Amino acid sequence: MEEYIKKLLEQVRFQKAHKAIEDEIRAHIEDQIEDNMSEGMDKETAEKRAVEDMGNPVDVGIELDKVHSPKIAWSVVIAALTVAVFGMILHVYLAKEFNSYHGLFFDKQNYKEVECRYILGSLLGIFAMFLIYFIDYATVSKYAKVLGTGMTLLFVSGYFLIEKLGNNHIILSHGLDNKELITLGVVWKKSLPLMLLFILLYPGILYKYREQKSKAICKALLWILVPCGILFLDHEWVQAIILEMCMLVELTISLRKEWIRVPKISTLVLIWPFFISLPLFVISFVYKYKPLTFYLQSFRGNDIKTAARMFGKSTVVYDLISYVDDGVVNIPIGLLIPVSGMKGSRILSYISLSWGIFAGLVVVGIIAGMIALGVKATSKIKNQLGVVLGSGCITFLIINTIIGMFSGFGMIEVPYSFLPFVSGNGIVVSYVFLGIILSIYKYKDIYAEHVDIMIRDNVKDT
Image (tube, rainbow, N blue to C red):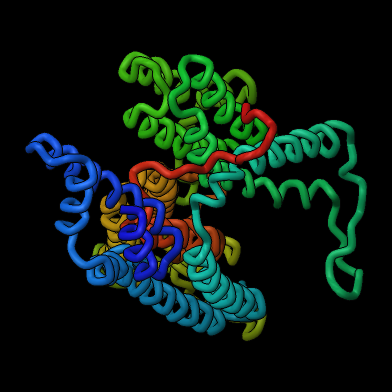
């Protein structure tokens, strides 16, 4: 049997598939040996007959090599490239139209910069997507707890050193000529989105709690509360809620798959209401903000909802004084969207006001279709770690699409919202999460239901 398995595995080129294939073939042969022995054969004869029944090891190995080879979700890749090209064309057209009004109310250079940044961001995003495709998510998950602990200590230290001890006055040079200066506090603020990486690390952390009980669920909840708490402390409540929801979905799926030995239904009934009410409590009683609905209402929504038509350009125009011709020029409402808004969900507002609400719905539909392809790809995964990780990535894209859609159509006003794959900000991170989905799909026929990600050393993993 050992010689048969060895010769079979020599035909399978992808080394990471060997363990799963060996376990499967060995189990099949051993089952057949037991059946043969139950028919009266001695052990040696039963094993010989079982191996012969498996067929030629070279032929079987070649067939298994075809099945257990890395895969790529071509439908997702083609959709991603198509959306990237579509986004580039959209931003080029956007910049061209805005530039036609330069000198009136807008800065031509600013819109050209927005155009270039989006194109560069799209190219970097596509590059990042393919780069992450070649990264083994199981290997990253192996060190998830170490990376998560390091990030937590770094951000907790940063919060108290920068935010609380008044180190915002520390100045750093920004730019080759050292003329552009930024404070350490700004650097801290811009680094906070890195907390979203916990969505990618959390499944690996949960996976190491497999077969544990109540203590494990307490640790799992703490891993949600700490990074989200850091974001809440710095008033980044939108990112905190997105991170919280994504990690909560991952925890829910892991509990359904019985990674942690606790009563599933009662645990989830307690967890979900707590985490849903937590942001409301923080915003209302800790921040002492006005009711949340005040901050979610759209301050530009009435203009958008009043002006936008189902088909075609908005008929509402504004009379602005031209500082070039000293005359009055009619400016379409769609062009009054700030430059910075082109990076976020306001690009959907621009599309709806310039080409109609239907065009905006088409854009949202394209994004939803690409996410649906990602859902279809992850649904074929048998490895549980990949399923949980994929669910977190999909949830992140869905939540941001929903927020970006409602914000873009003027129904709510959410700060720093973006439309995945279309908005200038969030473009790279969107493709990073898509790359994770491709990486998971790559190993769908290679990794078994469970994969060993424990660090093997003399230190007990806690």
